[in-house]
Length: 169
Image (cartoon, rainbow, N blue to C red; front, side, top):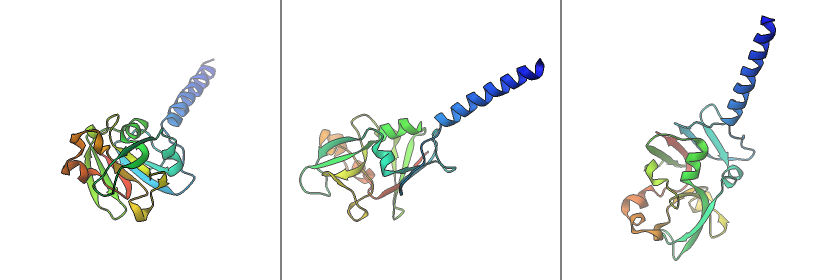
């Protein structure tokens, strides 16, 4: 009788553990990885952290807005994943996002910048995919025209392009 109950409990523990583990995992990228995320995140799909292909980012309820930038002429339309949504999806913690570009250029972005209606991890500009040649594959873009608070040297410095890696600290 005891061994039957032990087996039942063991089965229940396995079921709960397996369910919790699957809830903590992201799908595996099926295409080229465009973004890796490490640090204080609660949801992963690699031993190091999280890896995303473009399709995975597109599945995270992207948003679109128009804004002018200091690097382009006239209003531009950007589409991408809100940083707030990415933080939520990964159950990220910490106070700082260390964003690194393909050329290893790195900036620090306070997690407090990741608010609704705030910066996005853009993968499209004017309906076209961002290419490495033109600030892609990912560019952190703020809705600069929405508030004077986003029209500062500090915010422009956080607007890193060719983003390939994020680390939550």
